[in-house]
Image 1 (tube, rainbow, N blue to C red):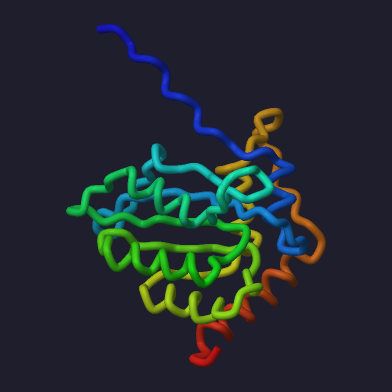
Image 2 (cartoon, rainbow, N blue to C red):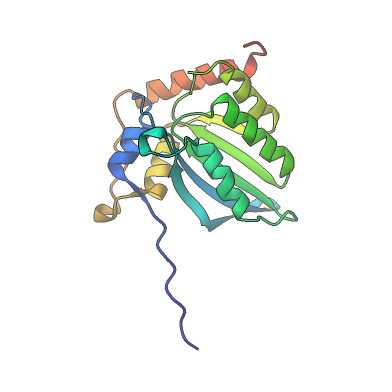
Length: 198
């Protein structure tokens, strides 16, 4: 029996790209989204590495029609044709929380795909558009776990989505005040999710 071709290596993010876009102290224009999918079987979860990767939004600066990272991800996820008889957990680590329109699209997707559970960890809150609070609350109401990234999530992303092949043991280099900023953002998000007013 002949061996098939070796599986293609999953693309990994450049270290500096990760640091520039996920630092919760900066305000980059791009949105990066790292994702992974697990099959839920009883109390256990099985990672599905073929559904693990990252992407970023497309913008006018790239000569393309604008498209937010979440919408690109929803298109990608729809192409997977996940078995509706099974249950999945999708975890997204995103450099900006979803805008109101993207939150609405995610909620719509979840309503149409009850076999998918969603967890979102955001590096910072996208608060530039009116209605962002309502969008985040709608995600929570649709049973989405929405949280801010802490040192644990940054380290996890560094280990699983960032290319540091030169030194596989290279640890995540936290920036100054990461813990303080994550804690402040967590309190802000908790206030948004608990409040019923915009």
